[in-house]
Image 1 (cartoon, rainbow, N blue to C red):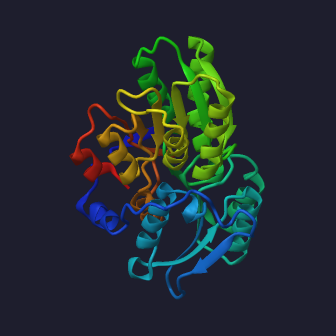
Image 2 (cartoon, rainbow, N blue to C red; image 1 turned 135 degrees about the vertical axis):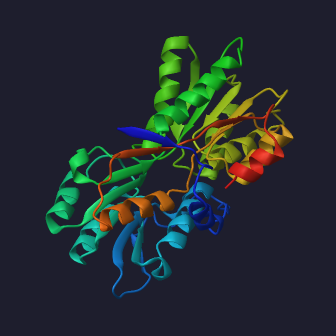
Length: 338
């Protein structure tokens, strides 16, 4: 059973917990952990609920920074938790960190997986050890019996919402530069899948489709290569805000107009505050929301289990929407920017 939870329809306690998590965004989407093993942090000990939290590198993007801040604000000793954190953009490093947390005897393993595949064995190990698993941010390809709940974004719907918006623009022709995130991640799969379906069904032209791994500089290089080739394009579909920003940098260097009334439509995802401000200025056209604030819902699941209750709904989807440059307001930015 699935339910959708409105991002702003929270109890006063939830709102208070989120207020301190902030909407700070990283200056770059590049990650320093790509070439190293998962980094870990330990916040304390004692007669507390012991949780091991595995996440992507906080420097990956503004979304990830907000997500990590949210988790750190919730899982504190003051809130009854002994939390340890591990970070990596590599699935094998995350799996190693998970195995270590299980050996350390954590009560709960909280997981935002770098890749959807490869988790069955370690989740079975967790179950055998009595460690309960809760997924956040992203789904994985594993049997539902191996985890307690999943508090996630509906990445497929994010992609479909964006593609439907693009279709509604009614362009005479669609020549699209598609800049993908980390291949195999749930966000990449959902946002890519929707566009691929539209390309096939509507006859849109993919000028190029390349992965920039959430990185602005790589996205800029991809767009610059297309500009240098002389091939026509009128849409940039970037799977996060940082890559959209890199793409725009290449357009600006080449004096190619973009945004409302420009020659190129700019699309991003994650609703960083600075990205929504670009929409308000008319420099971008569309930004899809990906809600990073999941910690309160995870805490609710844990408290339900700890009190002997039953988690009735396995998959909890956060409510999300897309924003259009022609209708966005400052109030939208204040409410939804991260």
